[in-house]
Image (cartoon, rainbow, N blue to C red; front, top):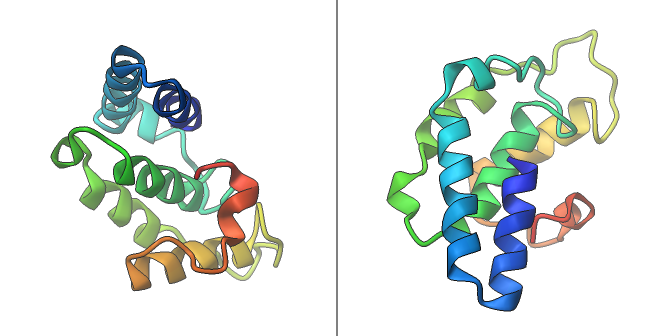
Length: 122
């Protein structure tokens, strides 16, 4: 998903519709493949459900076919995650990042503080 988003941003920057469509197809393929989704094993921002949610949310804002993205499935993965008591408090791999993703979900808008800028998603 992160590489697909990078390709989408590149396509937007240079006006390459073919690259844009290819990046969207790649992300949709990933999100519709249970084998790939099972590889996301934690709630973190770094490589977990919170990061997937933030990536797909940013992606959806710029997609040509937003109705094709299974946003409900990604939201469900985020909400099923748990930053349990054994999880560190950190930003990328801990409770803080997961909580920020949940906050973004609750407000249904990109973070006004741009805390997600370090993820290079927008």
